[in-house]
Every structure is written in structure tokens, then in C-alpha cells.
Amino acid sequence: MDEYKICIREMPEDERPRERLLKFGPEALSNAELLAIILRTGSRKENVVNMCSRIFSEYSLKQLSQANINQLMQIHGIGAAKAAQIAAVFELARKLESFTDEPKRKIRSPADVYSLLYPKMREQKRERLVALLLDTKNQVLREEIISIGTLNANIVHPREVFKAALMESCASVIISHNHPSGDPTPSREDIAVTEKLVEGGKLLGIDLLDHVVIGDGRYVSLKDEGYMN
Image 1 (cartoon, helix red, strand yellow):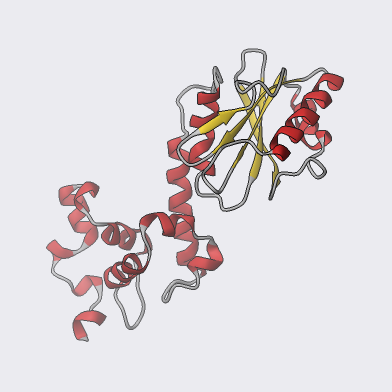
Image 2 (cartoon, rainbow, N blue to C red):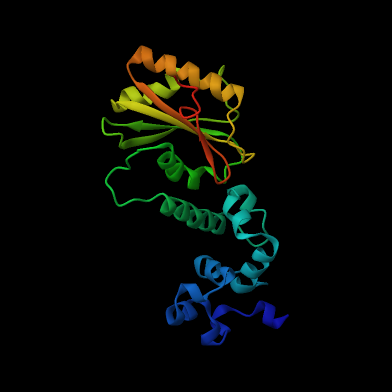
């Protein structure tokens, strides 16, 4: 029990996560040790390394990355501050996956849409409709979340999609949403929403270039499938 309660500063120096990272690099550390460095402190009954080892015995790295603040706070020993630290680290990791040194991300194909949005959408448990607002060179000016929840032609109104497009003075729009089931096959509602937005874009003089449905490791372009002719 004493070993369970031991503080980090009481551990041999060559066993402390921070010292091991400085000596051997972050790649030499376990997930628990890396998380321990982020959280820094445990509780009165459990040091931070043991706490993090316990967390990873109960949750996989993917499960932990998908948990929201409230779910993280249900983990024994994790309060609001530690939950915020964990959530922030995983959000930085997601942002890194889609980071580019280019001033603006250029969209040349549905694959580019997938590459940009998949890291942000793959862990979503609800459908999320996003609009990419593009300039005349098909460079992304802005990403706009249009709706969260099941896609429905009666709920998704063209004004919600094109309001941001008009404010941004963009040349065209690409929309994309995820299928939490992992299967990107377009549903009848997906097709109905697309047709509705194509017509709305024509009235406003803003082209809807594509609707990309993102699944688990794959995608479908409604334009390539012939639904936007």
C-alpha cells in the first residue's frame, strides 16, 4: 500500500516519467507515463503514475480520446482540471493531423476533403454537417459547422449553409458529414439534402461543388456518384 501511495518525488530519479523523458525522449515512455507528465499530480491515496496506469487498464487510448469532459470526470481521481488537460491534449493531436504549413488548404478532390476532415470526424458519435467555404482557387477560407445530429432535409435549410458563405464572400462551397456507423454509403436523406442545397446555391450564385460522406477510413463523393448533375 505504501508503494501505491508513494509520491513522484519519492520515486528513484531514473524511474520518474519527466526525468525518463528528458533522458530517453518521449518515445521511450508508456502511455501511462506520458499522461502522468501531463496531469502531474495524483491524489492523496494514489500517485499519478499508478492513477494513469489504472486509467489505461480500464480505457484504451482511443476510448480516452473520445470521452467528453463529463465522461472523463466520471473516472476515479479525475476532476474538472485534469479532465480539461486530457481533453486539450487529444484536441491538439486531432488538430495536428489536419495541420498544413500552407497558408490555406487547397481542395483538389474529394480525397482532400476526407484528408482535412476525417481526423475531426472519425470519433464523432453523432452526425456532423460541415461546410468548407472556398475562394476562387478552391482554397479553404473557413470551416463552418452547420448542424449536429441526424441529417434531415426538413431540418437542414440552405440559409444555414449559405449564410456563412455570403458573409465570407466565398466563391463555392463543399459540404461534408460523417456516418458514425462507419459506412459512408449515402442515405436517401443525404441525397435529398444535397439536391436541396444545390438548388439553393444556384439561386444565390454560389456553387455547391460536392457533398462528401465520411465513414470509417473511407468516403463517398455524391458528385462522383452522379447525384449532383
